[in-house]
Image (cartoon, rainbow, N blue to C red):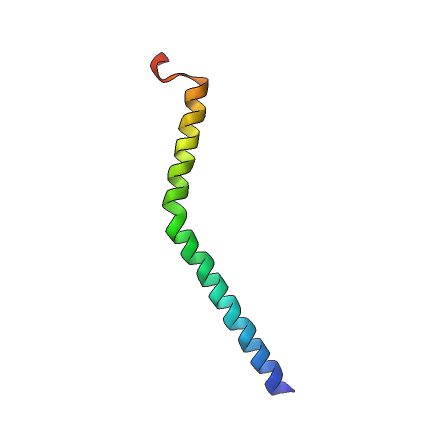
Length: 55
């Protein structure tokens, strides 16, 4: 019984480690793209409120 619990606990820990690693890798690979897109969206919103040639 204890061996089975240890095996299942290790399997769960390994699964959590793999999933966490995938989330971290995805975050690191996409953070620059996301920041750039956020800046573009903010600039588009500002251009709607104040046209570029008006300043």
